Image (cartoon, rainbow, N blue to C red; front, side, top):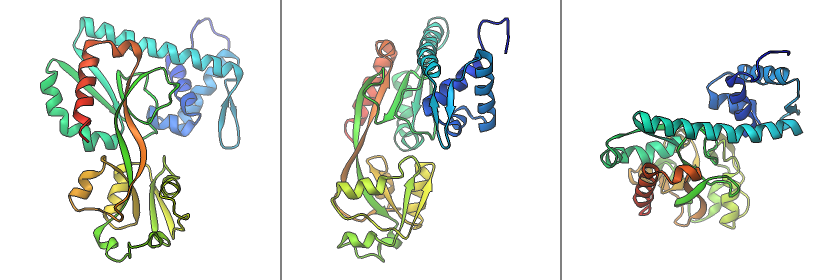
Length: 296
């Protein structure tokens, strides 16, 4: 596509950046709140604009071309710098704002109950909380702070551990009463519930617990942790629960632990870009969050 413009449209660049992060049109569409068709159109437009293939379409996956990988690496850094400079400009000449990217279930279970305290701590700072159902192991370019469930050690972020999670097996009280929990054999021929981003949770748990592979009657997958918890509490099946994240569901009696033992899962981390971590407002809220969650 011949053009006198020197840059492609920003929306096409943004679509390519997010598609490249996930290497999935479907996951990128969810993050961008667009249809998969619209995202595909933006990628096709960008490739035609550049007259270069950026992605290779496999049967069930995408891969970068050499040019696509180089372009994505450059755009990733460019968008991060643009987001940081934009925020600094807004902070200097407008209202101060901190943008936080938080997993949806973490937000509802642990962060929202503390927002009143946060408002008292920083009364002159606007807080923007962004939640998304995708895997959240990378710091979002448009965020100042991210709460991550695990993170890549190669990420260009400053990450501090908030707290580790334990994995426990849970069920609704009415379902648990029908089970002989004196043996792990009671897990066989049961309906097992998982989050679609953690499809191997039961396998990983059984390996950590050093028990034979579980043979379920069937599996049910949900795309949100809230749905997983709700399904378990309704007695639709057994779930792997992350503690202390789901503790209030146990304390309320909606679900109960089937076994006393637990296995270690992943930790939650607080992450920011190195340049943002030095900002006084980011440091203040980071220190507060770490102190608040260290008692969990």
